[in-house]
Image (cartoon, rainbow, N blue to C red; front, side, top):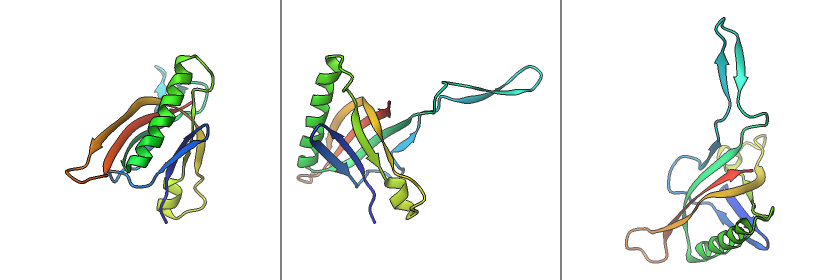
Length: 139
């Protein structure tokens, strides 16, 4: 049972299932903290909203996946440069649910903003196998 991270924008969509490391590519943007007053009372600091997910993705990709992600990034970047509110991509992350085979863990379905553009690296001297790296932050 393989999990995936699927990114879509408009009618374009691409799914990644084969990541370059053992760590899951998603985590929480740590903005909240527990502080203590001078008399030892604890109080929470941070934004008055839930903390956001971030994705640092490094995945093995085919030329077709690279082309689709580049199409998504280009369209997203054009919307961002035009100051349109449509400058978010859709993301569905079910990796943790699938890796643990636990249906009680929900998939993450949300909107995100590219925080680093896609970069492409050739894997050794193999033809048609690349590592595609990019970052997303939930909005």
